[in-house]
Length: 464
Image (cartoon, rainbow, N blue to C red; front, top):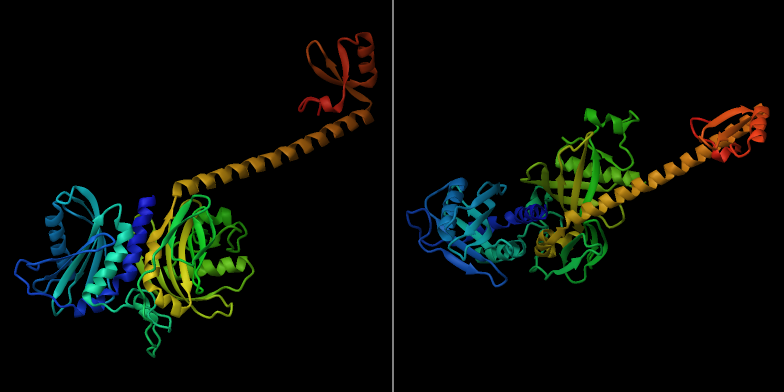
């Protein structure tokens, strides 16, 4: 599970940065090509922080899919093994195609390897391809550095990282919501070094730049504040109930479509932006606060087996006087689990538009450097469930004891008013309720065998 979550994070980061290559690829100078489908001389770039970039031109006028096939052939020749290519993603113009892959480096010390393949195949003009490759255990921490180096090699602009590129609040990956007037671009600096911070309860960790403070972290859910108004919350799991699912009727109960206190009500079929905004609105209402105003400019789908994985870009205004904040968020949704319920897990980061633009490269590094110990989180949750059950059982036992005591006293009072007594035969242990006169006669005749029983000694089901 941890490995799968890591893969989602890598892919989300790659998707967020994909649009950054559009300018760089289109202006890159490509050497002469041969007719074999690839450049005669592939340029190899060893990145100091780890990993290797392979870059070259492609002959002819291939489609993006054909170009990817040719690049995969080169990976096979390089590694001596056939790569396993994951889900492919295109940029908005359809000219850039990218996908993560795994391969065994049989020609490279035999180690398991992971990589990112990117091809640029315009309808006219030279096509090219690039491969970012590293050992599988290092790739999650080196892929962004390799991507940054690739952009430099291609001459892509410094601020083209997929986070906001202007004070107007939209970035390269979210330019669908760009204002009509073009604001002054914000230059993104190089990624800041990240320092590993471990959650106090041991349920996760993440890389944070200097000056960022972890405010709360438990059960894999972490809240962090940056020095310039940046905020993030990763691993935030929300219980959701689908009001349109017939199985949810037992939980909905009240017939008015309102979710139980610990749920939000969102149809599982809702589009990602609607589901995301609805969750924030309902949680704010439950806390008796004004809901934030959220404007999602772009949704990027990330392939995920057995659920949905969406990356979103836009603006959020919490009505706190701070105005619009640039928003980058990932939302992972499970399938419907039981009784019409499902889970939404959010990874949300927002901050002042100018700041987020300047820290675009750092933002891209933070997302894949979050790690959650799912096994430990589940253990803590299960323990809390067991504790809750124990507390509930204790409360029920207390109520049962109170009710039993009241029933005994009532039976004793009833016997007194009716002139009756409960007598026990000490030889057999049998109880009998009889008149006070007969009880007294039995006890007087044989006090060692027959004795009177007080209400505290009554047997349920026999004496009351």
